[in-house]
Picture 1 (cartoon, rainbow, N blue to C red):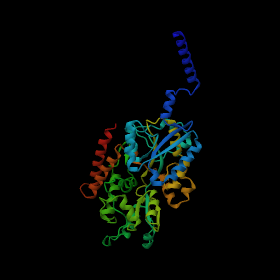
Picture 2: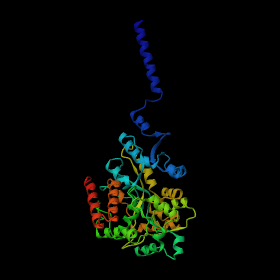
Picture 3: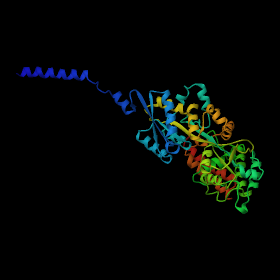
Length: 435
């Protein structure tokens, strides 16, 4: 009886084993990893993309962008993740600490160096070097900047600062849009009457946010023939830097063509004054076109290049995209990132959101070239504008240092030379941490 039970037990065991072998195969560790790393919908790889534009631009532009990519890459699905801009930076830092990062992230310019230093982003050079030559040539704009010899992001959209002017105000005074510093001063004086609280421009060098120097100060230093950075170090404390600062101060203090309260005013006040037609001039990027049309549909404004000093000069802004260092799908992520860096994606985005393409081929498109306002910004790329943020560790801190010293100069606490030397000394302390 025991012998029979033993044989029956063996036979039943064999049946169970055969049934298991003939059924669904056991999941391997590799397959488990694929599932946890985003494999879904058959053989498609899910690439997650964290950005902040759904609220700002709406779902349609994002959907159009993703559809164009997925049509060319049927093996990849893009999972668009959205947060308000104010939350994105800290969310990326938190996710990186947990090891559960998205694959692709939108990166505001001041974050680029920070994320490179802290290991959030993956160097792109290995992928970039394998791309066709025309791709590499067309993506080498102001946002393709290295940190310690490696590139951690690539431009998605950009822009530079140009001069917006109120057509009606200039016509009333029989003034042509200025093209030089001298013409700008002359026009601003004619357009201002401080006794009647009438001013040509907004005085704004507030410390919060410290972005005002991008619009109001750095371009003057470049136009005077100076530099902001050179070989990874501050280079603005020169005779040219002094000339740029003194030109800025002359508009506010000597000629009195700027609204009072410059130490506390920022971009919000500048844009509000221009849209309300309280001022005639404003330095702004291409994104300002949509802002002004929305704020005052009846405002008739034009745009011309930044007034030339010793030379032409402007500063670039914009947003990049990159791959997280902890992404589990870096090859597929690069497929998406390189698509976003190309002309097709950037023209889709430009036409649907009024953002300005970074790709040189996209800048040559008739959509840009036939628009008299957009063409101004495209032409200014011949000046090779820079975006200093991409080579500045602790960018926000460095900006605040600079703004503080400009304020010291405007309030006569320091000379221009002292202010720039002190700013450079403080900047060097920060750069020394990252040798």
